[in-house]
Image 1 (cartoon, rainbow, N blue to C red):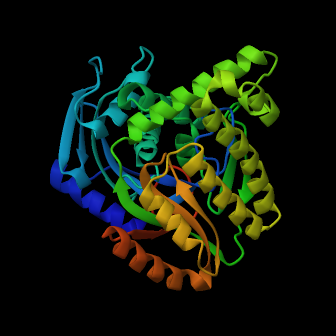
Image 2: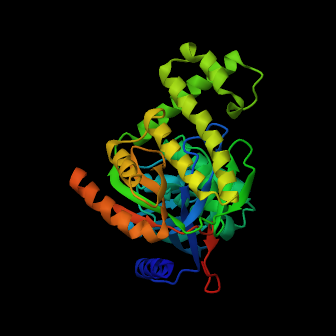
Length: 394
């Protein structure tokens, strides 16, 4: 499938710039097995890069200072001068790119013009982190083309800061980290406090991870996300005022949380309760995967959905319906909302030989209930960002 993406991106490059690209880069989206909203709270997460990509076709132009970028799928184009001060613009897709470039505009980094076309198989708005793939893909390109000597970790952090400063979303590091550090057939257990990480074999023993796209994205995603962060920050402040010796948020106990419940207020209490339980679930999930206990992994996924829906309150009617419907079928071990919330996908752990039957049934039910045709994505766990060559097979 990626060959088709690469070919269409190259074709657009040739049509747009009347030249051949010099480089092709692939930047993947990601899934998160478990550990939602804990990446900005010193927690652990369990993401993996997937075989849905943004493809970049790129050429350096040493004779000019202008960087021209064509977003093939959007039918839009933007150009900027690499020597000028960078500020946010109206085109949101371009802000992810400009946010990266602004951080690298330093006296020691000398840039020239570029021509870039990008196209994607990562569904927009489905919670598969197309924004992180765009940010980190562009940072990776600059690092390769201009020999900036950035580490993988630095590329991930640059992507995150771009989202904070130019896109206005106070996201954690998980999405960017997974896009950069992904490995084929491996999940990453990432410590979001230290950025230490380890890999686990993703052997699901006859089960598949299927994504059911609700095809809704409620417009309070960004505001809702930032509101949850405020709720959490208030809760953390109260906890540390009462227990100042505690080093990391994840070290607070449920007993400590209960002790400050009244002072914290019911909303912040619910948010922190979810987070502390979810951080523990990630540790249990990593253990379950490493021991091949896929049934217990499914139980943990379903527990996470309950927490996201009732304690963190980032679900919606459509996603609750998809999860609750899936869990009624034989062969479904677990299901939950995936991503920031308020729409997007559910992630479902389904027995491979039952998948077709479950998909058909859920499709019909969802259409009948909401008059929306859901989409289904079967994903494979993939490599992180790479320059594509004919010898490199994904």
